[in-house]
Image 1 (spheres, helix red, strand yellow):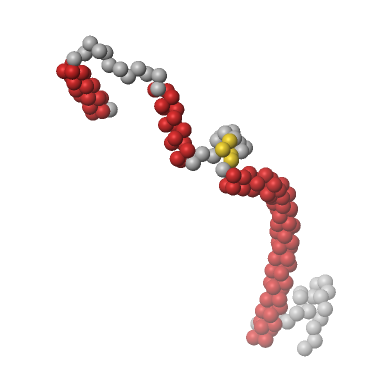
Image 2 (cartoon, one colour):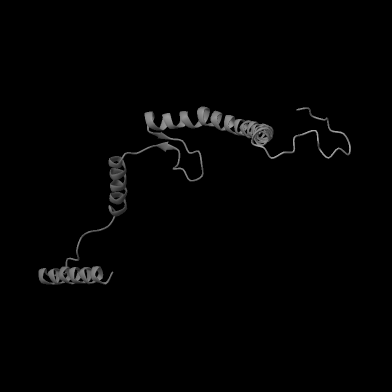
Length: 154
């Protein structure tokens, strides 16, 4: 079968126009090739655009992460090592505990106990000498009753 090349006003006679099975198969194969070529071209450009964006995003991440890494490595890790090894706190941020030795719970307890002893050591604990033994018992019972009543009313 001889095909006529496309020329003006020849009503597309350069391609077979019958509805035969072989002609339809050829058209289907050609259409699949065109669709595949268009899909490849579309994905090629899409991945190129995404890869440029992705590369820019990676560069931004790199520029942000390197200074943070240096701060972490050169500043925060040594401070943590000092805290753990020497029990010494270094105040870095406004909410941190003050700079100084880190006290254990036992040391905190004895420090607070000594403060309380110093605070109450100057109080005079002697009772008035003019109170009888019965008046003293009544006073103790009254204080106990008032203390119990205050605890109930809390």
